[in-house]
Structure formats: C-alpha cells, structure tokens
Length: 150
Image (cartoon, rainbow, N blue to C red; front, side, top):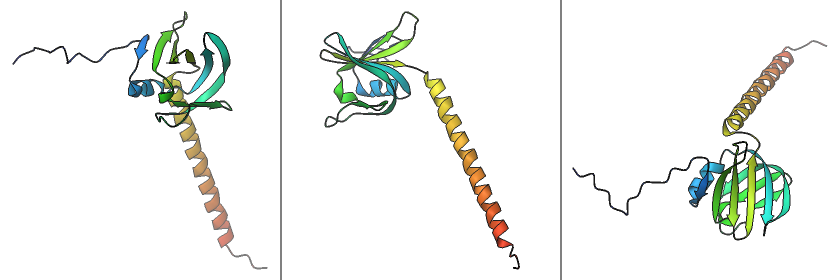
C-alpha cells in the first residue's frame, strides 16, 4: 500500500478564527447559527449604514438580492465574493462579507450555543403553553358536558 499523495489531492483547509473563505457552503455553515448581529456596510472605505438585526435567512440565488430592513437580514451568498473571518482586539470573531469595494461586516451579539439554548427554551415554552391551552380546552368541554337543569 502506498502513502503517495499527488499534488492534485491537497487536504481541505483548516481555518481557525481568522482567514478567507470562498466556498459558499462553508460560508453558509459559518453563518447558519449567527442569530442577532450588529452590522456595518462599508463602501469604498466609508461607512454608509449600520444597525442591529436578526439574520433571518441565508441562501444562494443569483437572481435575488441581499436585503436588510426592519432589523432583519436576508443574506444571499451570491451577493459576495468571499468571507473574511477576523478577530477583534478582544478576541471576538466577526465576519466581513466582501464584494468589490464593499464590505458587509457582521458582528455577532451572541454565540451559536446561546442561540441554540434560546431556541430550545422558546420551543419548550411554546410546548408548555400549548399543553396548558389544550388542558384548559378539555376542562371547558368537561364543564359544558354536565347538563344543568334550568
């Protein structure tokens, strides 16, 4: 058995906290759990827009736009050439989505673990509320079944 590896079979890159990502699948995977962000839109080195919002959807479609409005971000990965993964002086990771002379910087306001816990708590709370509603409905039906002579 030979351990020879040709030059055409290089290992996949390993990027930790900083680097440039060009593969749309990898970019989507990085942004999938991002949740709430502070965003900056920089064109030709000038800040043109900023705010906070929730990443609602990440998709790849050459026919649609990236949209940011009403504190919601709909990110089309086809709007960007690559993602540059960076760290602040405080060692917090942020994401620069780059295209030509424009940059959409996404600074997460929570971690993926915090986002998952919040989603799980929301699902748990919703299930508990539904149980209470169904139980109350059954109680009301039982009370209505007992005929009351008038």
